[in-house]
Length: 266
Image (cartoon, rainbow, N blue to C red; front, top):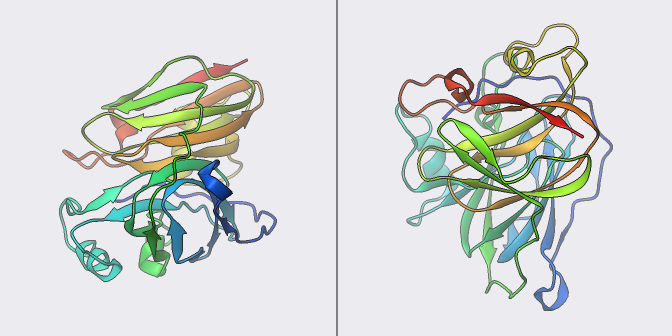
């Protein structure tokens, strides 16, 4: 699994690192994930249950916090070794989504061992995980009885499109992002500048040069299972939706297979 995504990012203000569990399980845990060039700053233990992941970019490059569940007693060292081998990722490595840059994503975590992982490469072609941008953590305890977040819209990812239960709208809203059985996918949303296209945004992301054709980027990253609730606050305008993940059959980005589209937010 490898991204083709490259993009310089503006340094955002520093936010405090937080891992707080709400009393009586009434609301999700809040977890702040600081993304440096090239390391994660996040707690090593997290209470089970619904967790709101708030990405905090602290570097000059684009980053993501891909949430990977390790099954079968595997550890980070096993994942690092597995990723050095050619071919598909091991079955015990389960991508569960997570935030791109400053996105806010809520997920439900069962007890077990997990890893934060950044697949995005630098300009030199070396993926960030190979530069040390990985971190193992443990989810512990019994999941509280907090209900799932309330979604305004459900987005179902499949080969090779997104199905929206309703159109995105201007203002604050919560999207429930789910992946249909099959390949992993991602939901990357970019706000396009006037006269620009989603394909131009994708081309810039793969080979940045000059001014970017978009003004903002949010989303959930590689996801096989687990619902991701993505909170957005959108301005009116034209947006592109893109999946950069490589196809399991030919290795080409899913956008080449048509998993790229434009939508109007009103």
